[in-house]
Length: 152
Image (tube, rainbow, N blue to C red; front, side, top):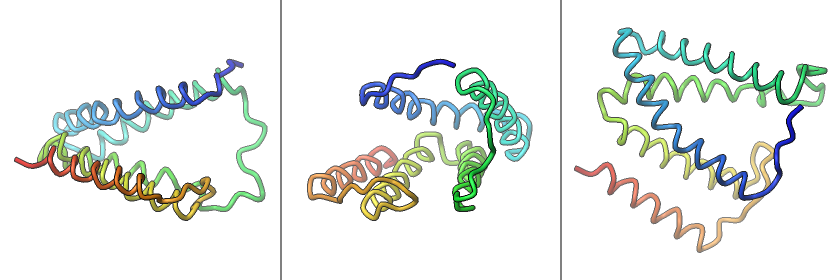
């Protein structure tokens, strides 16, 4: 198995690249959905490619799993994929009509609101991070930034 470094810099850079990838994925899938004339088919292709990549990573980095689930795991932890499906289908359908920048900007705003709520109340097993005045100000300015980006 491959050893992955455990430090904040690696985490930050990895998430930066994940963030860079979201609009690229949205543009690619929106284009595929337009060419195939089916946002749902484009989403299915994306998930097939993602499944192959995920399984390859699993087997190469983590090895063959011992168990698929743990008895104490609440069922809702398995429902994250529904949010991915909703995101992919909506961005694939909306981005060609609304613009990649507009679509992803509102996704960002939704992420900001959701992450602040999850962090504040330590929801879904996340560590609690208080919504301090500096964090609130940062969220406020990021929200203003989103609206300035989508403004014509």
